Length: 311
Image 1 (cartoon, rainbow, N blue to C red):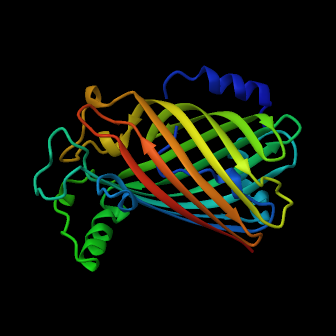
Image 2 (cartoon, one colour):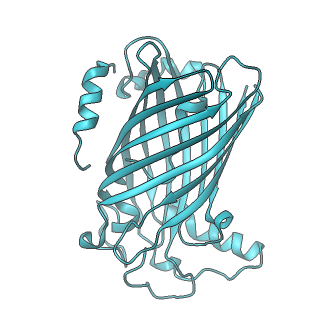
């Protein structure tokens, strides 16, 4: 489905409440035009903590044949033929600030895990400096996502304290989300660029929206044999609903969730990192800071490592 760019910009900027989860990366940076495989691993172990968004594993695979998928009409894109399509798979785990209690920690984050698969399209209007990323994803939040056995297994294998409390995790429920991001390049030079973006997610897992700015410095030319650049992003989100905090929308039988008045509606996030691109292989390292998500909570940081292989 194609929409005029001006209408999309206006729509995104007009959203007041109703962006993405912490595990969503910048898919547009290394999409297509051929086959591209990306593997992401995020963990707060790299920042010396073990709480909140504690682990995320992601796969992305872009390949030209998917552009002919009949289901692609459900995914918005900019006019024209400059676009790439791919599949995604994500598994994320969330915990409270302490893992030593069998009972729920009242006022703290609940245990939660998600497992989702998606269809993503990245489209571009290079003349106007516009990039759109749209994704439809579905899956599950709850025991079926495997958060308990993953974290317990990792802690047991590394000789760390076995987490307790996963029996109180948010119960199984449907995940069906639609994500949309529109980016506009405002300044571009040979060794630097700067832009702004807006994004939103609507569905059963996240309902929120964000506005942000981003920039890069270094070797940016996509035709260069080798690239290396530093990047940074800063955004502010307005949160309407977060099932990893409040429980699923359909199954209200979770033993412990945070009530709506405890959710912070204004959340800030900042990413800094670097990308090294050798042509067939690329590496991206991102450190993320996120402000408090709920009343009485703490800010949080984690690091994500991404390996990209052009096939």
